[in-house]
Length: 261
Image (tube, rainbow, N blue to C red):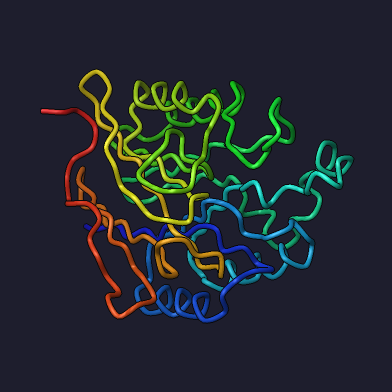
């Protein structure tokens, strides 16, 4: 039995691409994935109207959805009181989808928070994995059904990948090592607006790092896109789906994650 996941990110309601959103919704309706994983930046400026529009769009897909919080989903620096003390008051129609673990056939989806309300550096858009967030994810991995593939989902790449954009995630390398030790098979992210699928090897265990592109107008090297992840037993592959003349491109082979042989 094959499990199909659609991994989408950085939709940026407020700077969204209506054609790309309609195309994605059509793909969901036609192909009926088992779940949609949204790895953050649902909005552009964390406005209530953006969250409501984004939440209504996600709910209209009519499949299980989990939504991570991206840096654009926190109030901006010029609203410090709301950012520091009430950052999650604006989520509206999207609220019940946020950091929602999912259990599918043979796959556990585990959220990992990579955003921070404040940091000891000027650029607060970059990632941070705190101890509490990591411990929560590790606990959920420990409770996952035995034998399931473990897909951890957050907004920022934990380490730098082959993209021009950067996560510069503080605590990311430590978190990735801990997730590998706990048995994670893949870590899904967004933020950099270009897709990738690369291996991370630690002590005989392989974790796949999978990044999604964007469905917004804020493009980099890749046309509007999302990832399709096909899971068959202990093997999975990533297909890049683009709104372009070449709509489906494999970006990884169907290989095992986990123990390296």
